Length: 308
Ligand code: GDP
Ligand code: MG
Image (cartoon, rainbow, N blue to C red; front, side):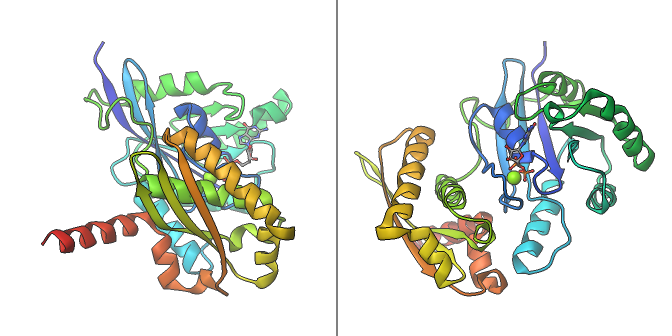
């Protein structure tokens, strides 16, 4: 059988389960999964390698109406995610009612002129008889190429979904080495893991106020030295992140280090700092720094300058 290879983008409203699906299919954690919406900020690629195929999955920020510099950047990312893909998947949380956000998503996907799948996610949470009316509802709004009820969490329906993608993907050699599971630069992955642990450690009002920048990422023969700064918007948030006599930040650090050691397969020395930067979401310089595509460009320019 000929080898198949291609790109599938997963889009949908915040919290629909995009990152969970990518992680489940890749079998490795490549994206933050969080019970709080809007935690995926850049598009992230996870790579699903099988004997007969390589599918590059593009996880994206949630579809939403942009309100500030950060959310505009996120919607730009989303637009870029459509470039060169073979299949677009709109994923929706089947356990919540169809609403204006879903309508906005359907309008948004119309800009793509290839096969669009509808994935009705979280079916582990709903009664079976509710599925059919939901499918009919969506069918009225858009001519989906396929509709799959799935559970990104349990994996139910996911194998059928992948097999269906394969029927539509081109015969092509793999785009990435077969042992690679993400295209993410390791320093971005490190920032994302720290951000996830920080979010998990904090209360509701803090998550969106958190940004993580890697200040230093240094590989030595024995270990990986990472220094990261967690930016928050207010003193109170800083207090929550640091915790009583530094307990919270210690927990964040330990959890992030353990996960990174596992994912990156190296011993890690992780140092964390917390800084208050009010209104960073309106600050385009900082938001731009958070964009890893740009970070990479800058790094490349810097290296060129060093060499030249
Ligand atoms: P994203 O914003 O679309 O990337 O959503 P996430 O992947 O971060 O998931 C949002 C929340 O929904 C997390 O708490 C997930 O654990 C949960 N979730 C995702 N998929 C499923 C599913 O199939 N079933 C259930 N019960 N929960 C899910
Ligand atoms: Mg996500």
